[in-house]
Length: 194
Image (cartoon, rainbow, N blue to C red; front, side, top):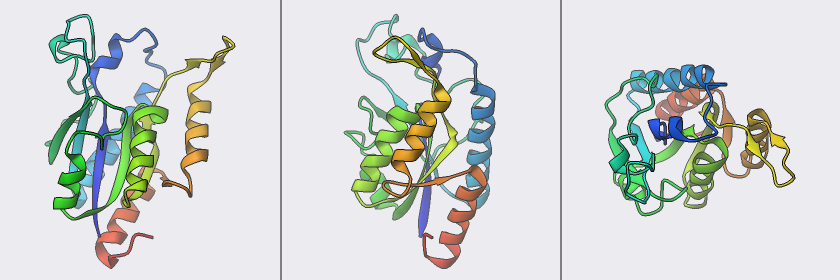
């Protein structure tokens, strides 16, 4: 069974958002880079997805005009098998990614990127509903603290725990980097996604 790694929204745009901090970023980048390098070593295609949406002004860090829709500093340099740009939370809406995956016979997806609870989770749910097997590599996703409706802070670690809880066994298999790489290798050798 063929596997593909999807690297979602790992882009400089986030450095220009008010919530951006370096907290947790080095650990995330280490995991993300290890996952990319491991997939490349196994011959697994790595697909890059960027997020871009209007307005098209230099002040909007998610616009093409801003120049920030580019790989996040610290992300391993890699030759993407394909690159897609989305304007919705799911990387499968209006991008052609679903067509590319189908044409390339991809049956298993490894999901990674930014943000854990937003585009990564949404893409995972969507992919699962469309019939792909999904491995969600929690350590190779990143997010930041959020402010709740009552004004209290919801810590990034708690957001990640919540995402893992709602995805596991319903929409995805939660994996470490090493587990995802081992599962991909096993699927390639046996034709079975465990």
